[in-house]
Length: 288
Length: 164
Image 1: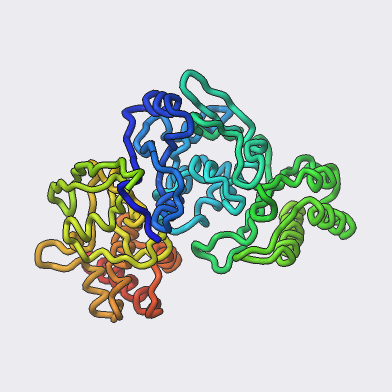
Image 2: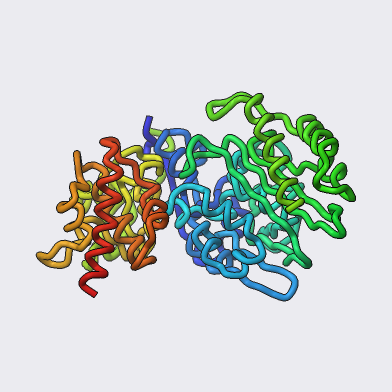
């Protein structure tokens, strides 16, 4: 059933401070509304429980991509289209660009934002695995304060996150890579364009003298939250990437680490098999 | 009824080159505002959840699905709908190509397809086949006339090159 429109309020705060002070004045009453690619779908389906929204789409404090020698910092309202157009992101953070290119259609990529993707907290989102592989940090702001938190610990359970009433995600910060990283991203969905993931795998590694010196692996749609495969990473570190026994051990470790379920998009069994296969493909990339 | 707090707001924007003002609930879909308040019924509703592209329009030069844009966010925007694609009496090259190459069948997806193609050509004046497919991938055609739609856009690009 469609939503009853008069029940929904939306206001446009004049700047970030005004938005945060509005959110602080009535805790958990006012929620942020960015590009609307998730919330408008819920509204139309009559499934949007919240009633009061702050239109943050035009807040300059949440926009823009800034680059320093150490970091690239993306405003929370950076759209998927903007991610793909950015030269330094394309060169140094290809997994994020791939994720952005494979999220929704052109029209969705023009409206969907990184901050919105994070705050929507779907375990099937495609940018979070890339953000985890890049050790992203996110800046949380509230009236009179700000804090940086590691993104890897931000999602605490299914649709649960380390974000209190009155807080907003302001920016996402990535550490610029040093040395030659080999990177791998693959989203598996029903079809190539637009489909929501059955499983998504992002990995990056650095090989020195034939051995894996550093490795980071994250997966979407295999657990209640986007998951960093820390046990697989531990097992791989210091090893040679081409090794049949290592591959089998790493695949078994991955199987144990993930907890995929049967749902409308796929089955737990299929997801587990594909996760193992994608890990093999990633190790081939590291070995190449 | 309880919970009826929101009042209609006044939204001013520029639609197809003309300044327009209308009253709408803040979270009314821009799609409905265009069709019902402004009587611009060229923009179609397909799925209503951002999957099919039938309601695609340009907002400040960017292709968007108007079913997912709340009226409040249209304030101050420059909007182009299918009614604003032709220039005076002369059709856009993409529109002409859709007619010449059978790009329209039942017609429901056509306005969104044409907006997607026109927007693609604004970003990539000479797109390759992969870019054309990618530019149209957010638009579904339930008649499944995809090849003729694709060929129409290819023809529009070729015609533009011939004229140049």
